[in-house]
Length: 419
Image (cartoon, rainbow, N blue to C red):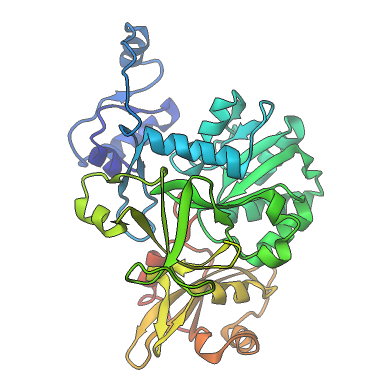
């Protein structure tokens, strides 16, 4: 959550650790009315912790429990209104579909607690597990590997790019991965090449979840029991509907599509939000007839396994044909000299849109250029799907949760020269 989000939510008190206090004033300046700040050791803190307790307030299942702000990768973050019922259903699905959680498990928080890692603290609290925040306060693969060796039975949630770094760290160090018990990834695409390497290096410790703040972490899941033995056939899938939700693939009018047809993923169930905070029009746009329209495009097979294609707003329409960026990204990532890639569409007077690829090369790659990647694509995918421009960058813009900011990439199209 950013400070503008805090004001949007109507926050009445900011709690901050002393090491972050210096930067707080600049964040708050000019954003809204003065907000009291509570820091350990100051007079307000001492007054608060010594005050008399107030009675516990009774709450109904559908009362508001959490304003969960979206990551804002495609625009301004929105406050998702989550009820106590939503959070209980999410936690129940975790036990049934993700991991049963043992009392001796150790929950490690190396990703922001304001996102998926924080949501997934609930199951570990209910099991009275140990909770650990790394001393660095951030995601550092070497630190996590050391923790796993010292504590063991680590369970954590992280974005796919973080998991990729962790796997690379374990592989480079030649470390025994047995100190990691459960590694849950979600919040973005985990590419096929990365999943294959993760399973080869660390074994059956991975669980993929697909969800979003509007149905917190709870749409589909691909458990380790399914992912490990059937990775070859299910590697691109995000799994099947979790236990307390129903998932469909529908057309623009909401009609269910046949198996294998591409449409929008919709979900309904006890995890689905009641709406966006103070945004009735945005709420009505995604909540229709009891279904949450996710904005994600995908397919479903005859066994109920869902495969995501892309966000509906990220699909590139070139010459009347749909191009799914993830397909092009998967291909480019299979090139040994490519470390990261993100594909977006650029307006074109002749084709409507054309494909542009932003590429981060491996550190030891030499001589990698657009011509080589173009030949690589032409040999493997349809000509109309290949990128027309390649932009080589040092890094891809990401938010605090590790998601690539495609809006920022589109803004770069007018600034960087085409290759």
